[in-house]
Structure formats: C-alpha cells, structure tokens
Image 1: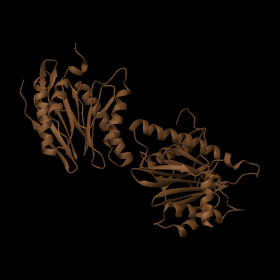
Image 2: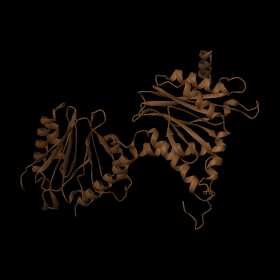
Image 3: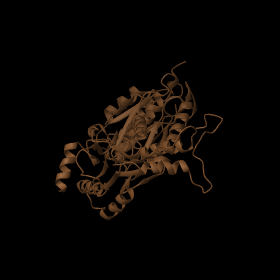
Image 4: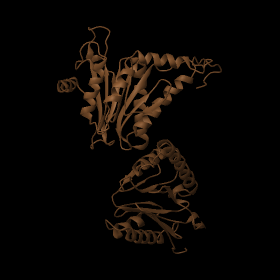
Length: 242
Length: 205
C-alpha cells in the first residue's frame, strides 16, 4: 500500500467525517442499471436490466452477470469496466482457494476477498474507489444458498433479497413486500422479473434483461452450480409470467 | 550418512474402520543407532476429528506441525469452521511441494472423519505426492514391515476396539524388525463421539 514516500490518496475525511470519494462512488452506482438478487430456499437468483445507449447496440454482446467459479457468480450496478477488473480478481481468488485446499471456495470467502480489494482501493495512493456495487450469488457446502452485496467502501452484507442501481430504493421496497421465506427459485425469478418491470421504461423482453441463478447440483463439488440463463429460457419465464 | 528421513527413525500407520479411523506411531527418537528419547511425539491433533502423523526428520516434524497449526488457526478464524480432512491433505501436500527442491524431510499421514462422519486417510512423500487408500496407509523407516503386517491383519469395517487392536499389533510387530523405530507407541482411534488415545509398551531395544 505505502509503495512511495508520499501519499497520493484522494480519499480523505472531510470535516463532517465523510469520505467524499466513497459517496461519489455510491452515486456512480446509483446511476447504474438496476440489478437485484433474491435468495430462495432452493437457490439464488440474480437479475439485471440492460439499458443500452441506442437500439443499434447488439444486446447479446452486453453481459452484466459474470461467472466467478462453477458455483458463484456476480452482477453489478455502476461502471462496467470497474466490474470487469473485480471479476478477474474474483476468479483468481476462487482458483487460488481451489489450488490450496482442493475444494471450491465458500461464497463468503470470495466475498471477503473481493471486499478486501475494494477496501484497499479506498486507502491506497494513486487509485480511486471502484464505481460498483456487487451482488454475489452462489451455493456452497458450508451455507447452501448465499447472497451478498459488496459496496465501493468494501462493506459487505448478506441478504435475503437486495437491489442496487438506479431504482434500488423502489426495488428494495418492492422486494420487502414480495419476499417470502418459502419461495422457490421459480418464484424468485418471477418476483425479480416483476421487480425489474416496476421501473422499466418500455417493455421487458428476453434480451433486455439478464437472469442468472445458483441452484443445488449434487454432481458439483460445491453442491450447487451457477448459471446465466440463455435468452430462450428467460423468454420462457416471461411467457409463464403472463 | 543415510537419508535425512532415516536419521531419527519413525513408524506411522493410519487405518480405516467402521465409522472410525485410527492412527498409530512409535515414540522413539534416535540419532542413527543411538536412542536419545522414548517419548517423542509424531502424531498431532489438528482438530477434534483430524490427526496428522509426521514421521521423518525430528526438526522438521516440529516445524511442519507448527506450520500446519499456524495455517489451521488462521483458517479457523477466517472461515469459522474446522477444515475437512481432504482439504487438509491438499493443504499439507501444497506446503511440502512449495519446498520441492529443498524439502522438509517428513512423510505425513493424515487421518480424520469428514463433516458427514466418513473416514478419510491419506499419506504422502516428502514433496507432497498424495496417496489415498480405502483401507490403510503407512509411512516411516519400516514401510515394508508395516505393509506386510497391515496386509495380513486388516479387515474391513472393524469397530473402534478391534481397530485399536489391529493397529497396535501391526505397529508393534513392524517396529520389532526395524532397528531405528519402536520403543513404544501411541494409538488414537477417532470416532464421531470422540477420540480414545492409548499408549503402547514395546520392546525396549
């Protein structure tokens, strides 16, 4: 961290005890596309919408949910390029764990690793905090289904359901009403589609939202696997909901 | 001078029973043919259902047991759980291979029950090449003797008491034909309900 004799950190406390850079990073998150996660009894769902600059962009080339390991994936709200840095970092943490212990990384361990990097970027010189909040979803042998959120400050929380991005407040309020401990994954997918619809300008289609899930799978060493749904399957869920 | 793994002398066996595992080692510490200690610890408790035997060069036995203790203490603080035997075996294997070209002279034996109570045993050489078995593993300065004893005495699905008896006989008979291991032994039987440890008296020669 202290590589040089000088400190070039831009993250300094102001007189009221706040860190301006982190507040600004959270603003960047709030400008991002809404992303939400729901933890059901038999799986975890991540859903995000893709708001593209023009209709000319090929929607299939935009991927907002990334796979970290067979059993974990993350979605984000905020700056895409910052997200990709954290994805690579997370993938490396997961593989290092597997190399060391020969078993898949527990989701919480991955969350801690990524959160630690995000924290370091609030205290190091010559860097800025990450402009993203992450939703980490996975399934492991220790806890089963898990959903975590990591913020630019490096804070992390476990959630039953959460949302980040432009409509996070409205989406969280909606989820509070809709969340139910007895939900299964299919219910969670439908609820997440409904939540995304709430604040959507225009129509929700299979190609302008992205859905991923962590579900149990005995054939995987982690006891579960993470997958991003193909467009066709997202379409099936949309049809069912109507 | 002989190989560093054969200076101090050691014998260690792990064996699987029915819902239990046992691990046994001798207690001699020698400097080649001269016996300098008869209560040298070669088996270390990693947690309630995981033990590791470290036959080899005595100084490295101390170092590796302390290093693994250190790693597991941090693991437990981080993950708030006990490590699984399989993961521990991988961890110690990697620890040894890190020193591929200037190795620690220990050839560990791992014995434990996993979180579902299933027995796990493994053994490895001094650079961490793991060897998994369903029945028994051996390591030390008289592996041929131990293999011979285990191959003729082992029975599948032994209850803890029978497993103790088999292990004790295998160990004592094996070390009787090895000049640099023996002088008594210790046997730990690990079950889901707890561990019973018994000291063995061997031939004092």
